[in-house]
Structures are given as C-alpha cells and as structure tokens.
Amino acid sequence: MKLKNNLLKIYTFSLLSLTILFSGCGVYSFTGTSISPDIKTISIQNFENPTGEGPANLTQLVTNNFKNYYRRNTNLTLLQQEGDLQLEGQIVSFTVSPAAIQREGEIDRAALNRLTLGVQVRFTNTQNPDESFDQLFSISQDFPENQDVTQLSPAFIEQLTERLVTDVFNKTVANW
Image (tube, rainbow, N blue to C red; front, side):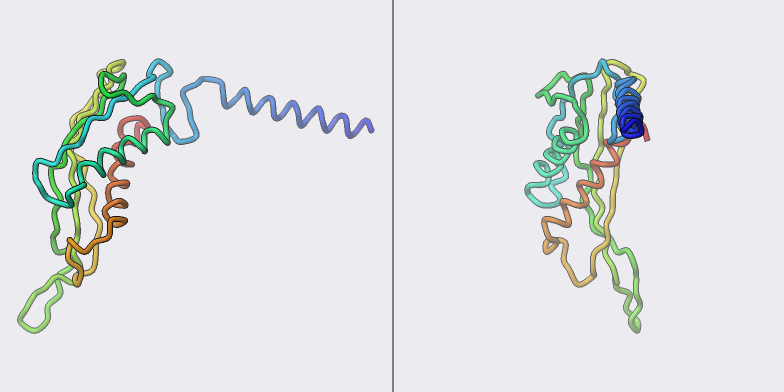
C-alpha cells in the first residue's frame, strides 16, 4: 500500500513539474512559433492578383489560406487592419515552364511541366520593427506534360498555396 502511495506521489509530482515547465515563459508553443507575449493581433489584407494569371479565385484562395493558417497555428486575434502583426502583398506570378526536356527525334518537348506561384509579401511587426520585411516568396510543383494548367485540380493549386503560406508563416512567427 505504501509503494502504491509513493508511486502516486511521484506520478503527480512529475505531471505537475511538466505542466510548470511547459507553461513557464509563455513564448514557446507546440507549433514552433516564437511570438512575443505582447503581440495579440494580426491583420491580413487581401493578396491581389494584378497579373491576371491563374484561376479566377486565386486571390481569395491565397488570402483565405493565410488567414486560416494563422488562426489554426497561433493564438492571435485576426483583425481587419492595424494588427500588432500586419501581412499584405500581391500575387506576382503564376507561371508554367518546362521542368524536364525530352528529345524525340528532332523535336524537344517538355516531359514534365512546373507551376510556380510567386507572392510578394510585406510583413510589419509593430512591436519589433526590426523583424519587418518585404520579400518575394516562390513555390513550385511539377505536373505531367500531358496535362494543361487549366486541367489541374483545385486540390493541386490548394497544396501549392498551402506550401507557400507555410514558408511565409515560418519566416514571420517561427523565425526559421
């Protein structure tokens, strides 16, 4: 009986110690963010597409993916404007290029195509202006040569966009 009580005490002490350890500084999170405790809000503006390239809903898709990703992975409150962190930008490219050239006789043709999405991002940290930046982020994904860019599934474009959002997220709040 005494052994059982001692084990219960050790288990309780261990659990309490871990709880205190992980709640200690308030800056670390399990998503890998390193957001200062004084930063409470973020504003994300629409990512316009002045190029006119890509699907008609590309602006909405990119903007919503940014908002959803920050909502899911931080405790920041999303504001229309004037957040402690501010994210804005525009889509600067949605291009298809050959990724692998294959020669058949006298003719060169693409054996694989590459879709590249480029977004110019302006990030402002009102609490720590040294962390602010204006940078181009670009992500690519290959697709078969027998498929036209207009035939790519919405899921393909969604995946590409999510990878880009992850890169921006890591640069803004995960300090990677």
